[in-house]
Image (cartoon, rainbow, N blue to C red; front, side, top):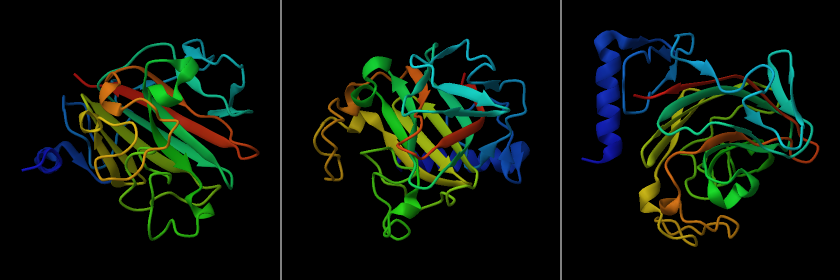
Length: 241
């Protein structure tokens, strides 16, 4: 039985036992498997990833700011946590403009050179790609960028809010977009910087094999891409025991 099947079985048992209902699951108990629904982030175990004054953030270019309860950037510069995280559940909402290309950056070991030294979960305007509805690729929203295509397109059109839940546990990560588990990865299986285990080519700028990345690191959000803005809210994290 695969790790994914075991994970799903355990989570279904967890929810069936009365620990979750509706669109959100109660994540107050210690779990080491991904939720199959978005969590209830109002529980006290959940904390904002970034302070309201960004005092716990690395925003070297000074391009990020809060507009009310929305975090946004004026340029294509990433913002990172000062602290490092290993096993956790990260939950957020994101809205973007047409043509946007952004992402959630995890397991970052070098914030100055993060592209080859992290894993990015893609956020972006999949509607800008005519084939996206039928054949999502490793570049589409919900992908483990450059490595795993989303199983389906769940991203909403530009201008609408989307919800992402990312679970990181050991070498494994899972991504839920708008209520569906769309991608998962075991980084230990990705020993090449040129070809993924399924034979697809890895973009040349992702020059560090995922198997060589640490399974903890700083968390970041990618900023504005060209003229297309991206907006985040309710960015909250819960470390896993």
